[in-house]
Length: 392
Ligand SMILES: *Cc1c(COP(=O)(O)O)cnc(C)c1O
Image 1 (spheres, rainbow, N blue to C red):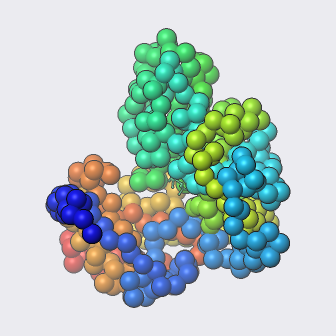
Image 2 (cartoon, protein in one colour; image 1 turned 120 degrees about the vertical axis):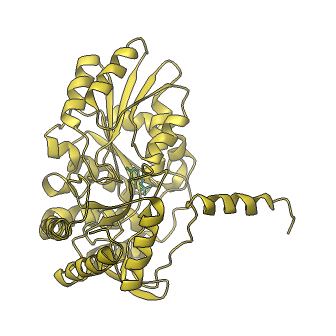
């Protein structure tokens, strides 16, 4: 090997000094409520497998059947020869589920955000973004030459101010996470849509943590607020509550047609293996014909949050299953996570600069798959560790 990459040693040390270095935790089992992680059996509370679909027998079966019918790989990008009937069936099903004219699936949520924002927004335009938006939105914005405007988190007065400041731009796009992934709070989408209408701006919502979690049958944040037909671009991911893989854009037919031809992250990548749309369709069916998963998710969420609050933990202002357990400094959050792991509970610390310096936390995500025994076990571990560390 050459020594031209030696500079990486210093770069890695720098990451370590700033608490930004991580090794990959490795699962020795399938993804479920209890896993073997780095060789140790733990309750896992930091996945986006909200409904427990990632390892569900119905999805396994659908995927296997698709492999038998369609094979494993697709051998081409969507535009050339990678689109099979099963990809189209999923897009039609998604459009119907999301109550839009059309939908387009990308290989991942990050690709959907990057490709869509890059394709739609040009130099004469302005993109208006909540300061806590997801990294994939920020990437999308960076791929454009548009004017970039950021408003303070959830601050509608700030948004209005920016709308006034950008009135001379050709087109404007307000883009926001629906549910914010670090704090679990929900964007005031009703108010955002009102302001957008008033100022003639487009709205794009990233529903990655709202899909399968909010709204009737998990239809997401637009259904939650009753805003069907009022949001221009409904972006979401199939990788989280749906337990599969992929991102999608739902909206008008012209939006789909245009993105197929211009979104680089759609054009220059191979189509999903057919088992992916097959399993995703099964997930969309299941969320509608087995409502108990969603019910259980919310019941577990309430139970866990009540337990944590009763013990005196600061769990922020989340209104979703995302539950930040505030630790303060980065070092404290890292220690909390490490001690939880020793006691048999896995959840990653989230530290500066991902969150503010004094707002480091361990982020818990409750899922429908957690049993009462898991939740009680987790609460007991938090109680022990919290007391030892003086957090409660
Ligand atoms: C996870 C996430 C994405 C990316 O989705 P993937 O399908 O995992 O690429 C995009 N936006 C938000 C808000 C997310 O939380």
